[in-house]
Image (cartoon, rainbow, N blue to C red; front, side):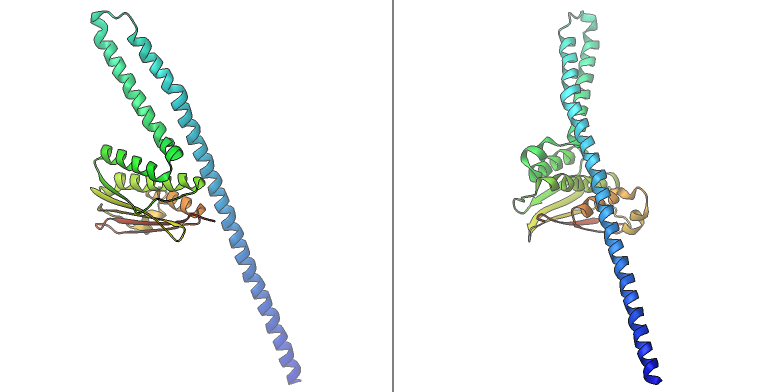
Amino acid sequence: MQNQLLYISIIFAVVITVILIYFFASIIRYHRRYMKLQRERIFAEITIQENERKRIATDLHDSLGPLLSAVKLNINSLDIQPEDKAIVDRAGKSIDEIIGSMRQISYDLLPNTLALKGLTEAVREFVGNIGYKKGINIQLYVVKDINVPREKEIHIFRMLQEIIHNTIKHAKAQNMQIGFSEEDNSLLLLAKDDGIGFNVEIEKEKSSGLGLKSLESRCEILNGILNIESKPGFGTNYFVKIPLRG
């Protein structure tokens, strides 16, 4: 009788163990499937966003730019009376400002240098332009030439844009150091500023999140690692690791 009860107990324990294993395995499979679907959804949304940016940038560059230039040319070709020259000159300057702003918007939407010369040159150009305009000292260090696949360049560039814009808009930093390197077939991006810092966990919970959600989303679809270290009064450090192959 005791042997029979022991046998039944063992069978019962085995059945329970199998059920639990199946249950946890199902949860793991569901979680992996959910994460895969989330990654695909995020990738689709970002792809749509980038395609729309490209379309708008192309329209600005190919349509509005030549149109405004033609308007200015027609204005300058008019037979202008001396008393009207000041008005025409102001109109010409306004058109020049519009063209300049439009070119900057087009560049922000889709930098031509990225497509023509690759990530490293596009980053150098962007850092030089924005540092000069925003009055922040940005030092860029590229340890060696980095061979980044074309499909990943735009995401890495956008991440760097987001980091720099966060620093300029929120950190009140005077100095920033950015380093690029490649190790073990992975791109390493390090960024450090001397700004006011922030509580990372609190900002992640906010809906705006200082653009942190955008950084996390792009890093996730690239199967990368994002680490942010900061606290009020001690600046911010960003560390990004992106696999370049596979």
